[in-house]
Image (cartoon, rainbow, N blue to C red; front, side, top):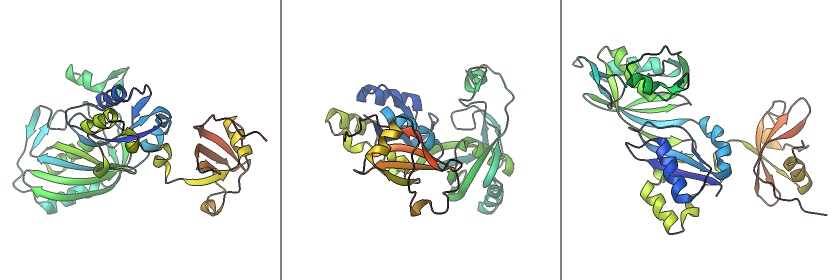
Length: 306
């Protein structure tokens, strides 16, 4: 069972619990998710099964799209609506113009201080557990990339934002920091992830739908192939002898073709396929030695004998 399921995570359920649910109904021991969603959040949560767990690192690098409802005028200790209100503020002077001005500083490469209520660990213990004990641990700011940040709707005190960002971006921090910039405070009232790389909310299945698919034996049609998450990489085709070399960990020579015309002098990753069109794995070009090295090979199938 090697592939990816596009799950629509329900509210009030952890990402770990969704993985446990899928492992139980699929009876697949090896499973993992590609990017944690807070229990409060809903939306796209790709679940990788079997050998697909080896491409989770590529999904982490993909951009993500979120829709967030931010409540102005209330600051919470968790930065979202699940927390305790620690401060209130006046929003009477807030309008779309003032918000747009404030939002301009949250686009591009930004610095974020991870919230105490997060899964980051300090001496092996998650920060949120320490926060519940009333402890405040010093954290280091992190850089995040925000490619798009737009106001979708403004119904005081709720402003709805669409956000496209890179890995490691805390949407709760954007909500909290926006409130600080406006001087009124804010918290994230709700959050939905609309996209992770090629996986979209319109195609995501609910847990009852996934459960029914496994019960009826129709789950395979919902399982995306491993290389679905690698569509942004170039591709090369190899023969049987080259396939044997890669399976045994040896580098090969390949005519890179036009897709690598401008990058062949760099160390790059590529998908690799057999002449029959079967996905074999990922290879990396070594510009120094002018050959391709196996990076991740997903097949150990015996080579054809002459």
